[in-house]
Image (cartoon, rainbow, N blue to C red; front, side, top):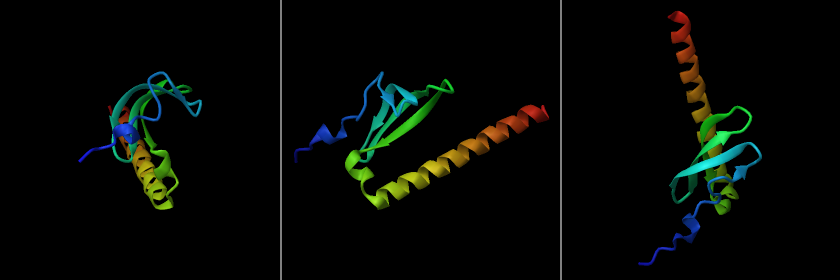
Length: 92
């Protein structure tokens, strides 16, 4: 069986800017649904994991809904971790 790896090439490369908000530092992984990158948020100067769906999957409402749900859940976990760290710091 021959596998076509061309669809698994990252949609961006090191140094590229995404949405004028993030600069790609390096590719962390590429899979069947897209790729994950280490990126720098330009405004906040913080490093983030940035996941980009393959363009053909981004057109599928069901896939996009699942992606957005995952993004919201990840953000909620991040806020919880930050709040916990702040509480630990304040509590001393």
